[in-house]
Length: 241
Length: 283
Image 1 (cartoon, helix red, strand yellow):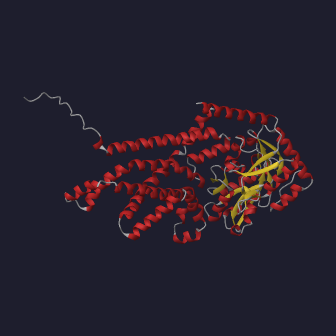
Image 2 (tube, rainbow over the protein chains, first blue to last red):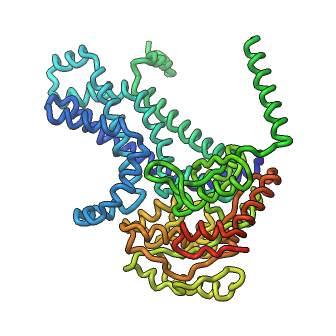
Image 3 (tube, chains in turn red, orange):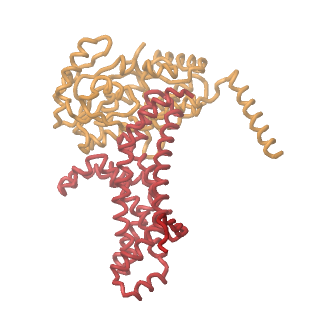
């Protein structure tokens, strides 16, 4: 194993990190909004809304992300005249927007189920207690249901974020030069697949280490009830006798 | 514990046995990798079978070498690392002989050679590229080639060009057009053809043989070869069989078989069957 070569490779691969992060965080952020909507549709009790959301989740969770990326990029590329008429071709022309669309739609499907699980796991007693206090539905959602649901969904959602960081590597198949894309290019120049993929793997490992720490911190912050009461602070001033 | 030991012993003896076999290896079966997405050199039929010039040639060469042939498909960008890892014994995938590749693997003698060039749609500004119909050799016609490349630059400035990654074509773009054009690397030539037709890219850089094969399909009838074709130097000395450096015996067998196939006209017959353009057959 050639350490000097690996160090050099590592630096070259780092150039792909901004694009990897941009894809991961934009898709997770947009996907979360979309997922929230889907989860609310599922729980709305309105038949058509519920079924639309169910069908969406079924399709996007049941097909491979790789296939979705191919369909959105190469598939829609075949309908250029139609898309131009609709005035959206500028969007689907760019590989970046296609990759982002595929990642967002995919994560929305998974995340909506995670959020729905979180929302449904809010203890009934707490909701009842809030109602008894006379909270309106909106206040109840904002103050009680949503924070508790987020706290409960967080471990599952953390998984999803980690998966999305790794899923960005699929963008390399539609010409995006993120970490994996650059790795492929370096391999073609040097034919040293082992060293280069080890470096690429290490980069994803570091990124995901940071992501999991951030999620753990968020979980800690959202769970004050699980921590012991803070030690009463000793007062330094002399007692007033 | 004993189970582990027995398992370990079995593994070890297995490894020793295969090691011994590799020592005085008599070639009975040769596993040959091809890409299967590079028509007409090699491609997969709608039924999923591998076909094309090289698949037919591989079977022909194996017949002459008196070995059993097994042709397998392998993604292009991993084709050399997997050869080195011993997943197969030879590569026949439109691979050009270049000094860079010769550092890691060895090649048989060349069995086909053709120029490389630009492909664009009929209404594209790239049709103004100089030298359409001309063939230049980067070493033998060095001056003319250099002049042509310089003349191309203003036409190509700021254009997006698709190319298959890990190829002599992408190396050519990197060397002469980095910073002039935006280079977009694809996994296969089929993918950049689709993107050219969709208008995501302004042109492609590929082997003339591959562009000509694509132009033949009805949905690509507006595509054409533009500018001079080039070969030699960074674009490679021609297409040959790639093998691990240690397999000298296999190289000898392939060389003899290819020489014989050139001599009796088999390769010429095959090239005129599969290619729309002339693939300079060498004596």
